[in-house]
Image (cartoon, rainbow, N blue to C red; front, side, top):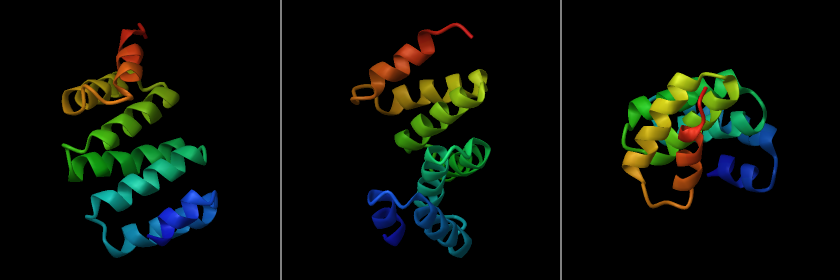
Length: 111
């Protein structure tokens, strides 16, 4: 919760530290990996973000937002095959979301 409060006030370094602590204390907690991966992406630490978002997806394969964020990070890293897998999974899980059209748009690009 402290990590989310830090994130919401724009203190990304504090949020990162707190989310890392949460992952260290509870390495099998999907939401901690998801939150850490998301804040690392915003901080431009894409490889680290991908590692934690992959773990979030492993821990909860039905968490649509984890697939979305992982696909987004993979796109930014140029890992288009991996990104495609997660865009497709995101659309399977949440086809009517407000972000579904963006996912479909990303899938329509030829890489």
